[in-house]
Length: 289
Image 1 (cartoon, one colour):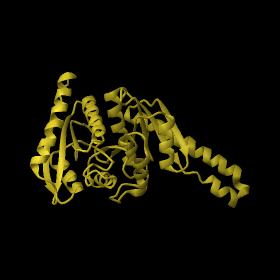
Image 2 (tube, one colour):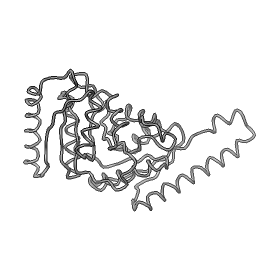
Image 3 (cartoon, rainbow, N blue to C red):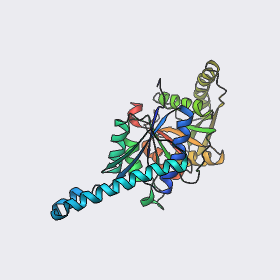
């Protein structure tokens, strides 16, 4: 992670949610000195229609080209409206999730920024199928944003934890995000009803906090690092309620299975994204291996 975030891929379907994701992409780009590549994926209906209507092939080609040109113009217009200068705009055809992942790899993106659902999924509380697929198969972190915060200000970051060794990756990402955004870090452990004793958790927290306080001193960063332990019926409920009550601005969590086998399951991360009103910086399984 010598060069943390240099290239950001903003994927949009031109819905209000997708447009507001651009504000987060711009916030991260400004904080880390990164460039932004804008991506829109159009459906590729031509292959399916060629066999049914061979006489219309030329017309289909022309219409497809027109759709791509319109999408290109919309991407450029979106940047102008937000005052964002894209390093590149890409219009791809095909399955959205697949094309997002392919473009992220081709453009060497360090972060994918996208809305939770998109226009077609409005009203559905669960994370959209496109975002879900990207989360599970991405090789880089995915920032899944929400509607309602067109001018994001990230000053307080929540990091759910269960003290698995693999969480060193998560904590390192959380530290770098906090450092770049000059935000505070709060590590949260959720004791489910069948959870462990507070005393054991306190001992684990001490070593984590000591490490990050040393980092802050060595790197000359005035970053506040805190801890908290709560009880909740489920980890998801605890994370969502706590983040709202404490007015956090961002949740950083991995999608790997933790050592205790209960908290940071992929499904838990997806549920937090679905039910929380906060953006989630999700670290995919491929980075935790």
